[in-house]
Amino acid sequence: MKKIALLNGPNLHRLGKREPEIYGSRSLEDIVGDLRRTAGHFDVEIEHYQSNHEGDLIEKIHEWSDAGITLGIINPAGLTHTSVALRDAIQASPIRFVEVHLSNIHQREEFRHHSVTAPACVAQVTGMGPQGYQAALHFLLTL
Ligand code: DQA
Image (cartoon, rainbow, N blue to C red; front, side, top):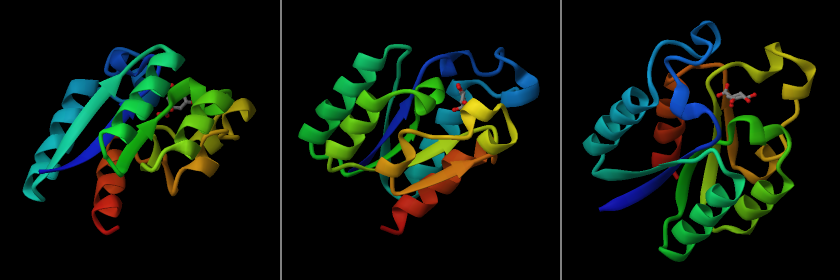
């Protein structure tokens, strides 16, 4: 079965409890469950990993790359705006990632307007809430 990687960065395990006025009431489990259901209709398996640690996220990208995964969805969370190392890992990986943000990063504080990681991704979805993950999946299925 074809696999699509799903990588979620720091604090996203707190979705549902974390600033629900910004990020909504759905938990990460809910979001991943929905995505797995959609993927299942297309005979695709979602490999999910969440971590609060930059190095762990980077190592997971290397691991998935070596395992032959070629498509991915990433929400680097706060690391979006700071992590050259995560961008380098994405850039060096054969995995084509779509970057997803639940909130519209352009409507928020100035420091969130710039994504360090997006140029290493094939596309970016921002401000669609949990549906952004679904949109990313549908796009990846066309590649
Ligand atoms: C986020 C936006 C980031 O700026 C923030 O640091 C996050 C979540 C989003 O999904 O909207 O943790 O990536």
